[in-house]
Length: 370
Image 1 (tube, rainbow, N blue to C red):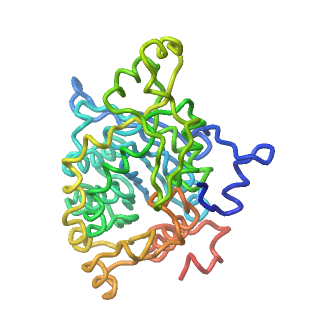
Image 2: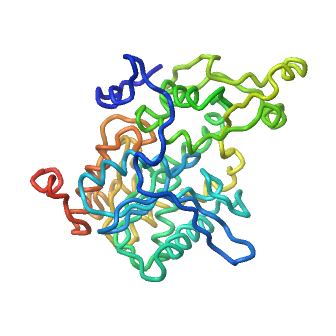
């Protein structure tokens, strides 16, 4: 069930006429990777960040639930071609390669403080002008961070595919989704192939770099111990269709004698168990529409579909209280599925409010100056 992508999205990742599902390094998209320590010296939390650019406003990028900072990789390349800016993309707590003492504390207060602490560790008390950009759960955290005035130099807010009404309505289906995806994969290549063919990420270029931040390598014995209570399924539901292919999934339902035959091999599992964060789900989204509207700064809302807009935001948008754009058909992983379109919208927002300067080669492009 391969979703249609543009010709450029497919052709850039083909080998011998067939899609190339091998992973790609972060180095292709970011200038540097760092592990930033915050907190007391005897009990520091370490956050993985990726940076790019040296001038202009600082775009702080917050990924969605289960993803990592690498979900912004292709977007980063696209925005860098359009405007002069700096980028800092961080792995939120419990995600990616970030290591914290309380990795299961996903409260909005804690996660908002994480963002402020990382920025302070990187830039001191006087960071550059900040535009906070968040997708999904990261969008909700961005709104809470902005409303709490934790970043004194913050000048703009961008929320991507996060709307209180539709998010609250969808909470009941998240556990179904989590149980419906494979628990492990035979290889990183298989995980990337699954993510594209299941429609979770509809851009192969992005999947090749971002899936590295979503899954981790572990040995078979460890995986068996973890997964026995939750047998693997090879059915993924996407738009009422089912994608079946046992070749992607490491068989975790073997008998003890069968497991011994494959001992020493490795499998790839999800880095974060989102099902354990359920008690925080309502708190992430409840009240975000009003908080978003109350933020006294330029705001942009990017949506994957107009059906996601709730009543409060609809009224406010009609009153011109924030900029909004509905992107071409794509999935929830908006900045991965359509990185060029998201970059165009963000660049237009930055230029309109004079937060950033256009790159010389794009100054004459009307879509960025209107």
